[in-house]
Image 1: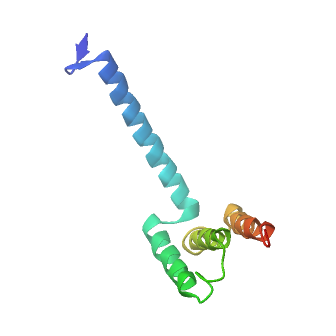
Image 2: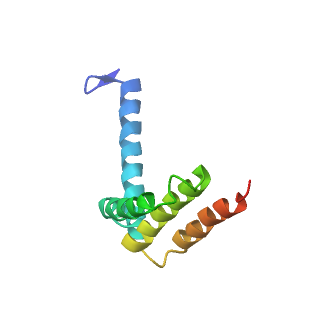
Length: 107
């Protein structure tokens, strides 16, 4: 049987694709409330990272773990600066990435 020239399998696939698209949009809309606008985040985060990457120790004295922790902290700071600064997860994430680097000092 076909509906609109589509088989049952094609209809199911189209329905699932539509559902996924709606779920993604719903998630993005909800996250924008706490994380802020994606374009604004990108601007703030990339500026913070450029400052860090231009620092004298960036490529000479930092480990990959330390550089990644700093990048992720910049990412989380961008959410604080562009989104909801009172969202606890942002602050916990900053602490978490700092701890990841701290735990690996001297290893």
